[in-house]
Length: 626
Image 1 (cartoon, rainbow, N blue to C red):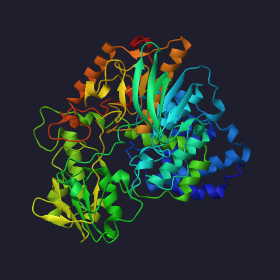
Image 2 (image 1 turned 180 degrees about the vertical axis):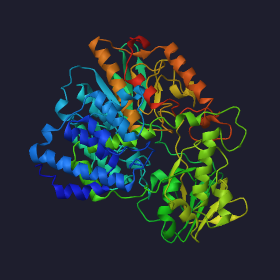
Image 3 (image 1 turned 60 degrees about the horizontal axis):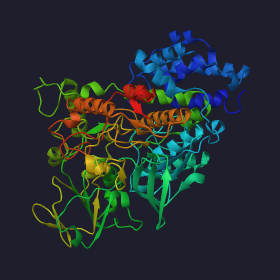
Image 4 (image 1 turned 45 degrees about the horizontal axis):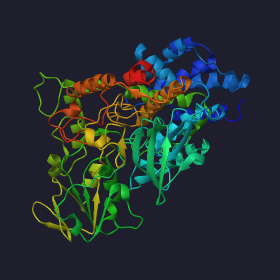
């Protein structure tokens, strides 16, 4: 018997299991796909619901059979003997787990992510087989991923990171309450699972630790240069390379680099509003991503400017420590009810993920599939919809009623209702996870919510619409310069400075390549933020797969230059813009960081995940000039 799996341990752990997953696992343990026909069938999966709405009796039936079959398997065999189903059988298992037929369009993508083979890439690394060198800018989530995948393919690289340590957004955003809002067992590299997440939506220290472990496991530190800021890049047609200027620990450096991959992301340059007399304030003042080491909260009069994702996490975390806390809100956020948002992962669940073969892979699938593309159709504006001004179609209006009802159920102070119920359509801005913490904090006697922005400050505090309010500390939870791509790097691909040409309306192909910048690739580039499904790590894996394919094509064909054709870029951009004109994110009632100064969406993807996966999984050299 497997040293980790005894009948007694299994019986205890299964009480914490996802039973649709356990039922499907029995195919692995019995080698018999027909066993699914003998088990209670889950209902259609819903994002965040992992039990398929099975009754307690159904769960008991599955558990009884599972204990018998798994114990029987380990009495006679070991993990090396576990059955690996055919793709056709895997499809049937998918259908069973999510309680519906998984469309054939999605099978290749889901099989790729499911990947029930080995996930250890270390043994597959190849020695660099070319003099060509890639510069990765940034050692956050996507930079680490890029390094791992380039090394896997034997492509030489180095990383320049402006900070003193790795982690990107998870290094910089160390404010109280900072956590991910995608379920952690999906918000992780597909090939590098973590079975020991302490929470379902982990906090910043644990996320940073995960990326550090990946960074060191794959030995990336040998080719990473910290405190190194790229300042200028200019493509030299004569050498077919980038002339890159950087500053490393105060020392200027100039060099030639064959290929550059930007991994600076969209959310790394803090945005402070243009406020009159900002410099006059004499107290503590900082952006949420620059949280100080000293305690400037406890028993202080604190102002939080903004009510988006950062404020939503900060306010419940600090409210009870403040003498008084005032929130300045331009518009309230829509919230998605999620009681598990702060929930810890119990030890039995960790045991299942760690010890039961393929449990973690199928659990990830159950988190992924219901949250893939089902929502997208509801985000298109119905031109004939007139029933409610705060929604864009029938389904969107039903969601509005659901979210409104969930909020109203938490509100006892009726004066808050008009302040916290949005008047724009749901999903128009970033949706926030609601486990009750935000509205509970707003009910505290020392917390005040003002429905106004900040226009002017003074030495003592903030001049509101009615009076001057005194504060010890002002926190700007006001987001980032998301539309200012690659800032502050000056990039000239031969046609002039990228930002000077495009301002806040960049042109790209897939958000990855640019006709104005040869030998240049971006991860989390323009139009690749996800607001309807998936996780940014999923998108990043799509992007680096495409980038590696392009670089390998260059190497295999001895090309020195790669540039996407202008007509290919234009066709993609036209389709991108055309689709957004029909969607909620560009609705005239909505204003958000997804949009540029003209109200056009430039940060966020309008595509189905499966569309983007297919495009990035099939590099087409005909779309490029070499």
